[in-house]
Image (cartoon, rainbow, N blue to C red; front, side):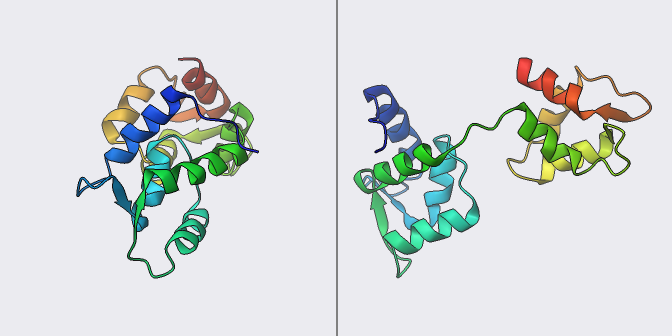
Length: 150
C-alpha cells in the first residue's frame, strides 16, 4: 500500500499541478500528465506516461482532476527507486569509450544539455566553474561527487 501523503506533500503537489491547469477548472489535460509528474518530482519514462494516459483517458481528450492525479502520483512514488551516485556514474560511463574514467568537456556539455532533464548552457557553465578539466577531459566520478556534494 502506498504511504499516506502529508498535508505539506499534498500542498506541494497541488502547487505543481495548478501550474498546468490552464483553464482554471482544477484539471489538467491528460497529455500533460508526464510534465505534471516531473514537475512534482517524479521521473516517469515516456512509456510509463503513455500507459497512464491510455488508462485514464483512452480517447485522449479528457482533463484530469487532482483527485484522479494523486493516486497516480502515489503509485509512481511507491515504485520509485532513489537514483544514487553509482547510477549517475554508470550513466556517464557509457560515454567513456576508452575506459579511462574521463569524458571530454564537450561531450559532457552535450549530454547535460540534450539528454534527460536538459540543462541550459548557463546552468552547465555554472556547473563547470567548479570542475577541473585536465586537457579538456573531466573525471566523471569526481564530477558526480562534486555535484552531489554541493
